[in-house]
Image: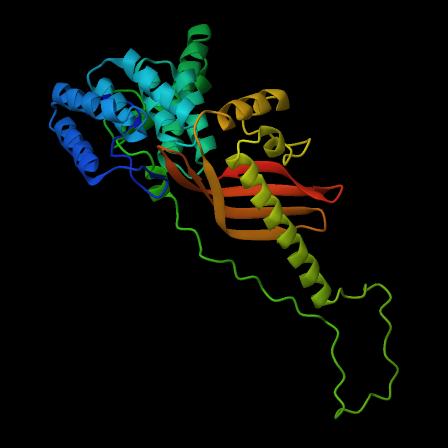
Length: 363
């Protein structure tokens, strides 16, 4: 895999994990394993031929397409590889590995800004994807090196820039990874979701400390003190635990129903209803305008083909009466893809209705 290892770490293993599960028969799974073996043996032409035959029967299969992109990268057919990975990011935007491998190719071409943007998208898609974080650090190192070089071209006596450039170059040359003067960022080899394996295991449940009321009940067997009680005017009366639990329970129930309706609207491809669950001040993931985000979501939600969106393991944490955070496991199914990912939503109550203010993948 010399083409990939010279710069960033690419993802190089077959697309099967908790994050991506494809509807693949045992025979087709064996075909993918055979392709991967051919690739590891350096038989790229045979691997590509077998991949093309595989994709002829399953043209939308993400795993086969990812393999094809990797093979093309190994064969130095970078323009075709870029086209394959780019189309994967459009069809499966929830997968971080195609973005990572695009960054690998861009870095090889010394297009570091493009590589940085691709890695930022990978991280935005999957915040716990360690490979993308490491690769992004390498890209920043290369950009820093270029900036210090430029500073020294303008002012060769700049000792501060000289020192910093030396530190950056020392970091590159002492790296344990093969990097001939460049940051050895990692390709994402053949598996769309090592991100899931690299993430730390999520705790099964959050044990919240029980809130105890400070109001002590009077025991009939204990005599009352003769002295007058000291009044503490500054201390507010404690909120009864039962009332707090009731309010939190009601909010959790309301949010559960809201998310069920949100997922149902998404599954039915009712774009208007789906977008109606997002607050006016919703923070778009990419910082784009609300109109641009809505247009893109409408395009993706209304794509041909049936889909099913559901969730489980919902945990709601309330922050006052009008704000809450919901964490759950989201499941997405279509004719050719089944994905599961952790989801976090920040919700606000507006005019008696819970609306989504923030949305992100991960913990």
